[in-house]
Image (cartoon, rainbow, N blue to C red):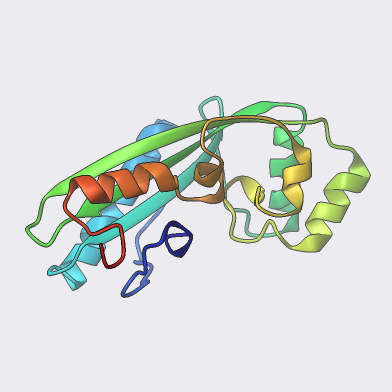
Length: 179
């Protein structure tokens, strides 16, 4: 997604962190905490660079929907989202070479149509739910389920590009190549 915004990352290295929610942790703070932990883990390994990390959480009310481990869990997510509005929170965190830390969380409200059994089975068969928060990827077949999206589309994909580029630019990162 950064390449789509004209930014070529030097390295993409997902950190290994525990993404388990703390007891009673709400979705938005969870996303912010995980993004910050990922950024700090990256900075510990590559401290002389700009480190950008993000985490996306899909929530219905206070309930965080998982990245489903199997088809049954993905089906549960789709049944939960069917005919309902939910929030997609993506937190971005940046650590600069001089160790400044800045974060921002972007929320988009998404509404799904009521899904029938054929739509759910077809989506599950596609495999596009794998590794996706809430069990869907809006940039694929699941876009046909969306009746309303209020906010950043790229946020639902997994990285709010306008906010990310603005945050990086504000920290002195060159966001325009050869400019």
